[in-house]
Length: 116
Image (cartoon, rainbow, N blue to C red; front, top):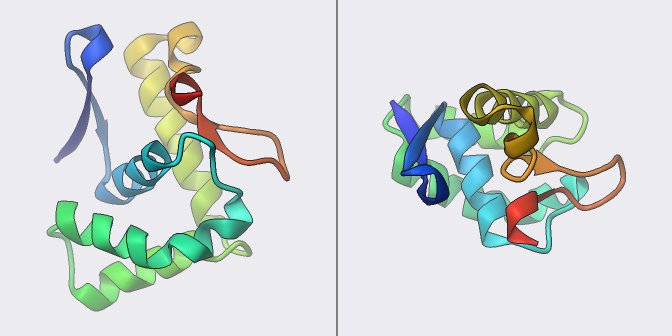
């Protein structure tokens, strides 16, 4: 089981899947944000993060999951961002959660609020 601790809230743990956590950790590395269309440029970095935190499946299955995540024509990235948002909202409530999840308007860089 993968969790992400939030120090500001007594290390409150947010549960997420390894792939969701991989995406979140990538965005934490880039406070300025990343355009969804530029995720493909971070594919190797995503694979490295995913391999370091996931013990699920084969290397080929992990690569396929990252390929799907980076494929702008698939819905994978939107699903992961939406699920991450839900995890934070359930743990913190809507007002506090908005500082922690990945957000941004269509065509803009997506970023995590508290990193700005």
